[in-house]
Image (cartoon, rainbow, N blue to C red; front, side, top):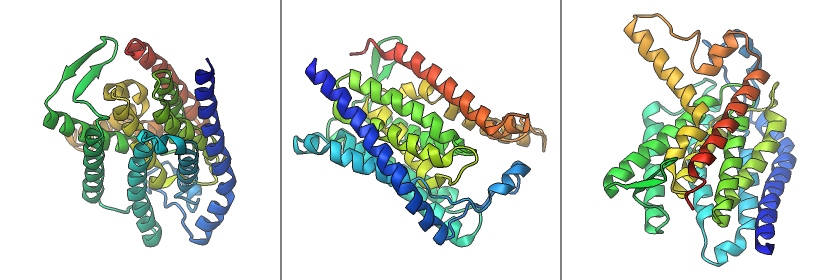
Length: 334
């Protein structure tokens, strides 16, 4: 009982440390971003009322990336001394994607436009990061080639090469789906907060305590960042933050050896991505007609009269519901 209490207390402390650090470094980070004139360029084809957001500081994801890093290193130091590095690997992997996003954001800021790295450059960098992470996880024997299927409580063994190719593209797809969700104030922040709570609780209940430190810390960082990112946002996370979050979601799914759970916990990310794919395909097939008023899905709902606050609330609630469903699908695994 004492060990269980200690575990949950450690996770709560990880949450609290990340929250406090992220919250209190928020103002100085905002000052520096303003000094660098790191203002967001707004899509010309976006909702007209988004024009008022032009110039809002971007790259704010730096706040929770630093907060999570401090929390993970401080609370996970003893684990690292004991040879446990799961939380560190996931953080560093997410950081790789955060750095890709930072380069993208920085180029946008310097060039004063809404395009940074090319799509090909992003894809190749993300694919390289995914492959390196998967090879490291396999080398450390933290990754298996058995694909666990929720609800059925069975695992299907797949040839290693096939599994690595599958995993690499799932990771890249997840990262970009989370990035696509970051389109209105607080949306990616709140949805991913719910997903991190799911991973923290699940990995803790499975006694993957070291791994649980990371989602617990990230949940704390996102809760603090929401204070700056809720509507009307004082700053945006930018690709720096959204790619970091995408890397975190994908890495946790594979580190916990249950990638298919992304279908449930990532339902909003999938819906946003599919709406974009449908829009493009329909536009090409009909020579200019649109299936949605605007893609991705959150913009369609905005143009249908939904407020940003309603979108954040409903999408977060849907994510919470599907996370509960995901737990029902995997609770008998261990």
